[in-house]
Image (cartoon, rainbow, N blue to C red; front, side):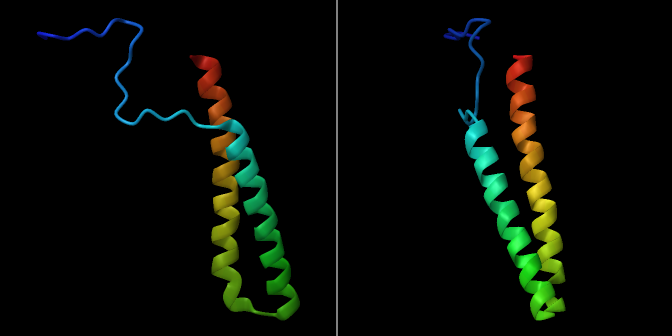
Length: 78
């Protein structure tokens, strides 16, 4: 187009965001520790209404750990 000055090496990014691997790992570990603490509280206090919260926390911990792994894969591909 007229006035387009991008080269092959420049890529348009709507949201210029560089994910931090250290931040992703740190947050995944902290969230996982919090999940295990809530699981312990649920079992010790027999608060079975916490079950949905704990299941959601476990799935979020797995998601965050997979995101930390994905950051490694996408940076090695580029």
